Length: 384
Image (cartoon, rainbow, N blue to C red):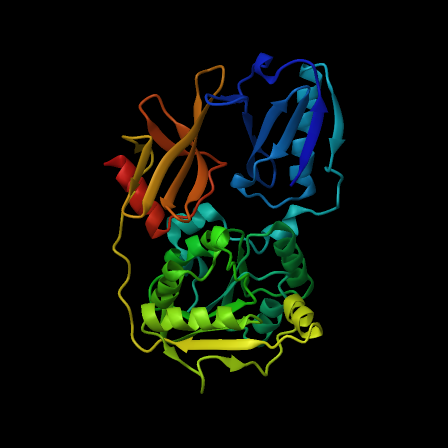
């Protein structure tokens, strides 16, 4: 994560400025930033004579030279104001420009307003969840030019490399979403996606890590809803226990039907991705799980949300949903930014909102979240 360390004897609390927002709960300071490519937040905190300045990953920008430059400039600004000096940073330019990357990215705000189907305007849609460096998606898109492929990836470096790969190949039927797919699936209309691919996901079997699991019960139900009749969910994994757990969950919690001779097969095809090559070098067996949708499913009940959104309580935990104000930051003009967690309690989203004098939340340019059903329900719950 882009960051810098300042050595200074003065405290952060002595600073004052319109764009400096101080936490009411701790010594944190945040600053909203807008550059030619991105909108994001920089966070700073002090530990003795050292001040750490870092990109706040909650605001989810692609890490380009544009972003690194902004973090470095903010660090230099703080060092000057505090009569200190920058003693460390990882903000060296890498010649990674945003224009190529942005060519393939869908805007999160547009997704929330219009939904994927309107944005894509295609009768044939396929999804890959966790595209990595994009090898599989690139080759599959080239072979199926009449299909629009949506690739989800949360990791910064892989999605950047994938976008550069697609640009070199001049592929025009791929769109990327730099966000967790678990929150994006609700933004597809029911019965409209032909295929959903998941290749070599992290199993996350350790109990403390289960909340990170991609294919939990909630997610597979969302997958079932958006697949069209005859559409397929296709999983490749080197972990037999994981294949068994996913196949069992599909049987128990969905009406999808096994679409192979056996519900778990040894895979004979090669997708030539980094992880497939890695596991084959280690002589691991690759397993295939393919399930097909045989009946249409109803769409979600519409939940209308209008911002600014009046909030009645700072914390609500009910019916598996959570809404919580984690912190409030305020500048010298008494303008406020609220740090909020909301959505499904086991796996909530996290975002910054503006906060009015009347306790109304409103989106900032740096507000990044996807309006899945759980987010809508929890925000409405806070509004009631």
